[in-house]
Amino acid sequence: MQKRKCTPAAALTRCNCLALRQAARQVTQLYDRYLAQDGLRTSQYSILAILSRLGPLSINELATLMVMDRTTTGRAVRPLARDRFVTIKAGSDGRTRVVQLTSAGEQCVSAASVHWREAQKQFESAYGVMEAGRLRSVLAAVVAAA
Figure (spheres, helix red, strand yellow):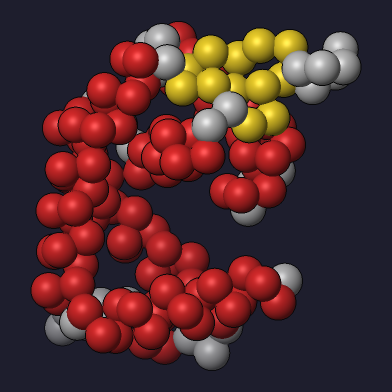
């Protein structure tokens, strides 16, 4: 029996969701390889980078910015709190939790940004700088339309 060459499903599908998820997994794996040098995953780096840019945020605000549900965001910040990159404190009302970057978190995101830039350069080298910019614009429109 002759082996069949495996073609990525994205090349075969007409499903937008499947194609986007496959592309997202592929790009995430690329960035994860670079950020692993700092002991981070792409999602963790994104949280730290947002907090570095915007300052303390409630879990709900962070979830909205990450386009994640609140529960998943809460679970995502726990390892960052365990590693002392963020603190999670009570907000102004008893129900709100506020996530804040620590000095260790600031140092971590600063060091990891070097590897993030390397991943960014690798992606843009393979895909094209202009095409990557257009892709980000199209994906931002997809997020805004949802």
